[in-house]
Amino acid sequence: MQLFEDLNLEVHRGESVAIIGPSGAGKSTLLSLLAGLDQPTAGMIRLADKNLAELDETDRARLRARSVSFVFQSFHLLPELSALDNVRLPLEIRGEANSEQQAQQWLSQVGLASRAGHLPGQLSGGEQQRVAIARAFATRPDILFADEPTGNLDSETGASIVDQLFSLNAQQHTTLILITHDSQLANRCSRRLQLRQGQLLEAHA
Ligand SMILES: Nc1ncnc2c1ncn2[C@@H]1O[C@H](COP(=O)(O)OP(=O)(O)OP(=O)(O)O)[C@@H](O)[C@H]1O
Ligand SMILES: [Mg+2]
Image 1 (cartoon, protein in one colour):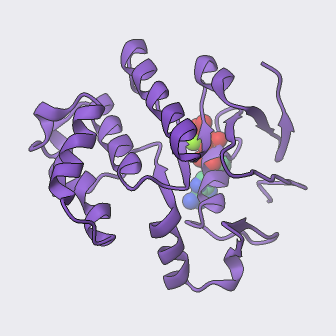
Image 2 (cartoon, rainbow, N blue to C red):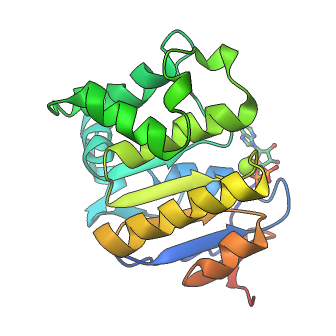
Image 3 (tube, rainbow, N blue to C red):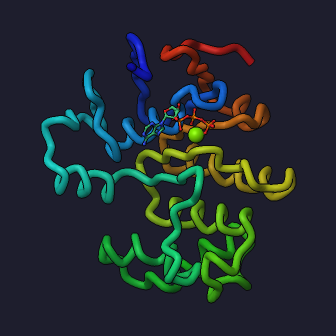
């Protein structure tokens, strides 16, 4: 069975796109495909002007490390690393100086300065989500993919994270591709698309 049918999407630099749709529609799967984390059985995906099918896994990983951040629906933090080290790791991989200070600063920005030394298992769901968001912000990506980034947050904390997403979008022209059930978040995006029965259609606010 095919999850997607005749699905076309073109996103330009600096756009913000909300993808909405019922549970099980394939939103998370679509996001993994777009980010080059998964490969489609048919069709073509270009990311940052590269046809992903023409790259081997090493080159796809390199492209992701250079240009992409991903906030997973289930966070995917490394359980044996502290909150600080989870945020720090992608900075280390990129060989950035002051990775510890930078990571600490990003944690503060999401309101978690006092949780830096905690392991993911010692954090609440919303706190883990914010660590994942800090990690995604830290590399100042060209494209940020986020799967329900405010799904575990109270409205005040969620609003602060949403503001930060859009300031990255405004200041660094970070392209945002977000899955969300949060209508406030969806309404701030420049486009809203609905995934339903394998197709992606423009949705109206
Ligand atoms: N690794 C997998 N192997 C087989 N089927 C999968 C796999 N991952 C997802 N699916 C199936 O693909 C469909 C789409 O799943 P996906 O996680 O993309 O949905 P979703 O739209 O993100 O849902 P939700 O809103 O609940 O997160 C589901 O029917 C799911 O069971
Ligand atoms: Mg999902």
